[in-house]
Length: 213
Image (cartoon, rainbow, N blue to C red; front, top):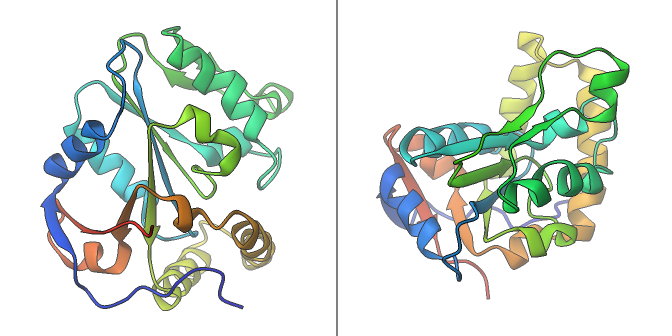
């Protein structure tokens, strides 16, 4: 079954990535010293990672936090408390974050999920980044609306390239379908990015559509 609207035609506003970033920051309601937290959500292979990296390259003092890192060897979607308690609450409290999720410790993974002091923007990207349980931690919620044919083709490419295996992809997509059917994050998005249309324009541009209300 399809659990989100199909992407319509390639209409919408075309913005530079820098202008889009400024527009996102302008949606924040308060002007305290804490960093602005932006959630970038969408189906697997929708283009979240690419968009997050492009925004981080143009927004001063921005960092990307990937839900896949927080969820690594933990759970596909039962990671809300790890992200909230380990990353978002301390970052919003102006603390330096160097968080090692439990599975990182247990499996001796190097490094940490980091949000340095002085960070101005935290870009949380991943399926479920704008889930309802994190609503109080997010300043802006972005949904990447990428059509099913495009995401399926990209996912198949990942399997063919060996970045994931077919069985893991099958289990992930099945769990994702159930999760998104329950959460329906496109319905509470503040901003909608047309995923396939964005991929078709210049590398420094984004196609933005009105959010559903």
